[in-house]
Image (cartoon, rainbow, N blue to C red):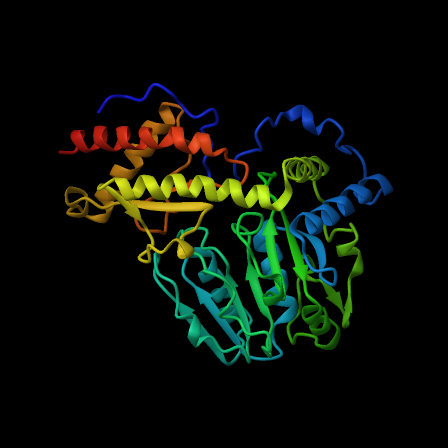
Length: 387
């Protein structure tokens, strides 16, 4: 197959940290409050601005509060688990790596009785009809490492007894989310808006706030997870006073991404950009016989439009053992990276041998379009060398 003659303008397709916004330059961060205390009035104003602009851009309900957390999305999700659980049983959904991590917290560390684990292999989704909403429920909206997402929030009742805790880091700003079905929503700066890593965000509904004000878990809560003290919410977290010291350079970068999204059309712009990229890959896969989605359900509403995950499906490849398959995928990824066409598109290490191309709002669809013929070229070149 002939080598393509046009390359993506930006070869960064990593699923986290994700591509910076188009036109980003390090000079954009020149006004960061470096060398200043994050407790200073100037720094707190910027931290509060990140909170306010995030809530506004997402169109979150007025009665939800938003805060900045240490430890990226992981820290924000862990904080909700350690601070809110323990009043009732727990149902956990897991169909990819990070969902399975939350199982370890609840089962092995907090040792909560009455736990129902709804897990599934990579490419599948658990049976959503079996979730018990008398319990608290933990789930990821989009399987960051599997490329499988929940189709909507119709499976979550309005009159649930427990809280719903949603890890939305690779979904928020890129997929429509019914916020009223989610009592806790967590994400990080490093995903859809392409911010720098290490900082997380948490949004809490009135139901979640009521739990914090009426219930104290029976276990000691580490400081970095503590969002309430003695049934009193630590209000500063939601007003710009962070639990630990944030990087003000990262804060400036987060504001840059939020302002960029706002100027270009807000949430609808971000959703449309991601779906345009997804449609390009979806149609490309439909037209090719060597590649297919990792997901076993090929219905669009179950397929991630951010971490788009696909695999080689031809017999010559499937006849090899897993180690050989991983080696072939790695060869393809190295070839594309060496050509400066696509960096970091190898699938998650614990997932089956596969590719994962990020297509959040900071990735321009025309770069996805330019990538696709290179994937074909790399595949046939590597196939020939492994024949």
